[in-house]
Image 1: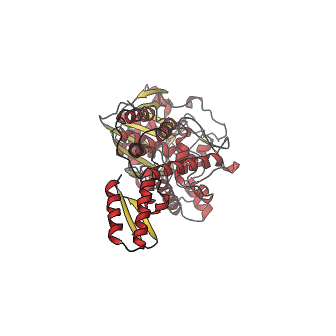
Image 2 (image 1 turned 120 degrees about the vertical axis):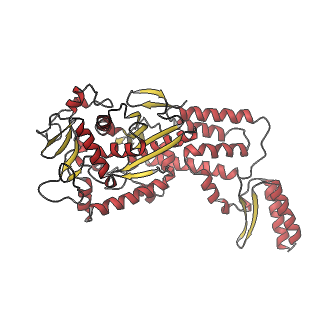
Image 3 (image 1 turned 45 degrees about the vertical axis):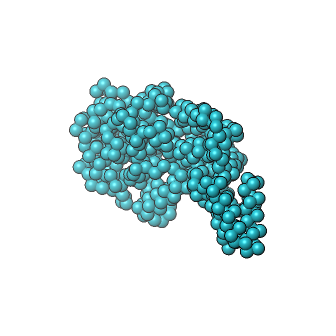
Length: 482
């Protein structure tokens, strides 16, 4: 059984889906005002790994991820996401573009990085700006149930009213300890410092590029409301998994729970909450002021490929901080290259040895135990290398690697196929095969075509999947079946 650490209960729990054989998964995606950092990419890999493992165990997964392209204020860095500057507007001013252009540019960059890291594509990337109507409607539902109030800058969720109705707030964090006047300017109009905006009014002075009409006046949605509105639209009022970085446990996710359950009257909103730990850089917290916020572009500029970063992420458990260093990334790139090299060496498959079935089954059980144990990818990687170094035949090893890569996502099969053309005679490790092919070359040079063709047929018959191809620059050996 798949076991997951549920942030809501703070316990490891066996997964019991809302609907038998199915799983609904929602991941909080990027706010597209800048390039995504390698810290954020770790969170998106968590979503990818969960989806891959669910599918590996036979679940039908409906996977959604949001794109926040409006309404996320800078105050969330200091404990109050309802204050500060709009990130999209701020980036637009910085780059002398419109907020819409900023959203489009960084969304496209995110999609490119998503592909390079071989992350599982959601059924839909849902954009906040394309779901304003759904957000307004959700606020109206909360309003009708008596859990909102209006002040000069917007419509707010009334946490005290929610608690008086017998509900708990802040299960994911210690929000009950939030106090006003700490790092952020207090809003004296709020009934409780924990109350949060559902809809913000446009400022009286100046203009915003992203604003909409609503029953309460022209403005824009609060940050939290988008995820509730979009997740429930596509996954239902109650679904299985909601994921994000551990920073979202403080306000964003507890607010989602409160507003969603207030609107629907159904509990729980989500059964399992997963949060990925922070990525450190050289032992320190990432921060722009420290100059250590790296992106995929920074890695590529230093000659690293994105899949090396993916491998690096797999070396750490998602609930534990992982320390990024250039040395660690280099080690991951070397390990990935070594694994690929091994895959290339196993192209000439051997026939299935007798007595290997039990050994194969042993490794299969090991990998399944690892990934079912709260997505333990470091343990899964250890099983991979144990299997690679075992006495199993090359063919069985490759069968297992192909199967396990459905979870690892290292694109081993595709990379092996890309490199087929590079397999020249001198690179072949099977000495008998190499000897035959060199003999064929000698016959071709003497224009003894019939004899050379006889060797080609013999080689291809004895090695299923192997194809000898004569090219202008020499002979290559291609393997079209695995």
